[in-house]
Image (tube, rainbow, N blue to C red; front, side, top):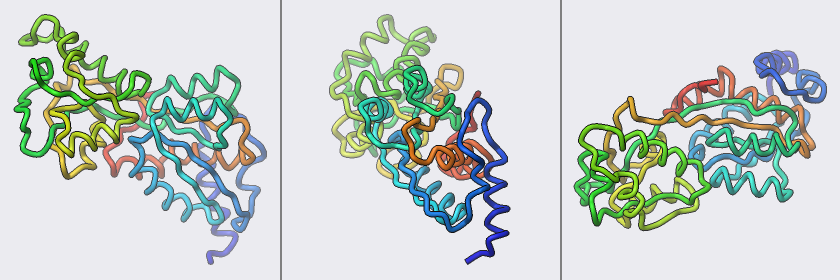
Length: 272
């Protein structure tokens, strides 16, 4: 076990990156390294692999803290929190769902931006649908796998399709033709990738990090000037029994150490 003084210095370093606008209970540096803290973190499905790595890194950096991670679509998690599900921290793949909780008075402070992500198109290995460019998403008969209407990736994908519709070489009615090709709507972005992996669809628009995490899909490039930058934000839940510890974790994931972990999985620094 590390000497208490060393652990205290490490914890103070983590707390030093406190994001503005959030009030918590007395500084986490007042806790001893042996204080047992359990945090429940609700995280967007697209964060699954990265948040597990962050879990290990954080528990090593803050002895005595245990994280329990629950992942799903950000919209589903936000609804669960509104309905009283016990959570200490909510990490969303957008800013809209955390802001809903802020506006409802269900958070201990403002939302904190902690990551960004780009979009890409995934196809099954071998690309049986012959999707060469994003314009092919409007080709009659192509099977597109998408997520539910309230899932953040769906809103980002709609924005991307709208951006592409104004490009040279894209057919009139591109947006409507894309929508007509959607054959399935899944609970979250991980489920979209899973269906593409199984060949149950010809293409899907997902986060670049989800595509990179799969060995069973190929990608079709999206023009940078038309791409959409997804902004991720998190909040501490007001009903948490560990407001200070929750705030410390959120500051850590948004700070230098958390960014290093997220960056390994392809996430970009927050834009705000």
